[in-house]
Length: 287
Image (cartoon, rainbow, N blue to C red):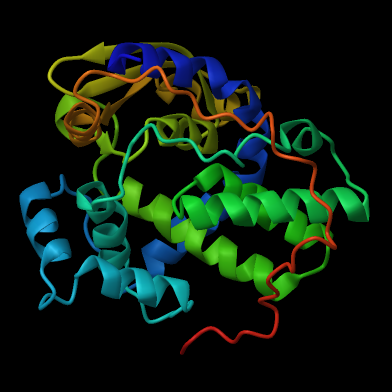
């Protein structure tokens, strides 16, 4: 499977993204407001990837990736925006990173997610597979968004807030890398699918995708009605994303390509009684 084919495959999988925007838009709006009021915020600038690589691989650094991941996993609210930036971008340099590895659990509950409301059993099914996917890929923004949605349906408010907080700050890490307006200010993403998550959050949908050497994706976009009314003559025609490191990492780890596809066809439907679902409502975020 070639890198070009994989990009095209990602583009074909974006039909379900429409629902994600509705779930993520309130989160990004809050994140933008919080960032404006946050004295610890970092300025928007192109990241120094070599420095991020060095820092996240150095056990003596405060940005050492396992340290940041441990802080993230224990819901430490003292974690700064800069630390989220190092966490998100630093994942590209970790041994288990693969920009096109898809969790076998990721698409199991797609039909259920398209429903406006869910039964208790359906909520438990979605929650189980979303949590399994996030254990496999902690930066799957889409699964994180769906998890927030079903936790709110289940009235697990503390759990929903924990995941929503993580989601907001990971989106903020992407937004801190640029404006997306041109090649020099492209947003940096660790997964190509995050490109579609970002534009959907902003009120657009992709109509075409082009790869520009040596490592840029350009998504031609169309604004939804609300965005078109709000921005009027300032509606964007497209956005740029820097995927040079994901491309390099894919070619490094798959030098001859791969025809192996991850599939969830053999995964049985979830039974809430089969496996204990982690409850986070009793976990207090670190102050």
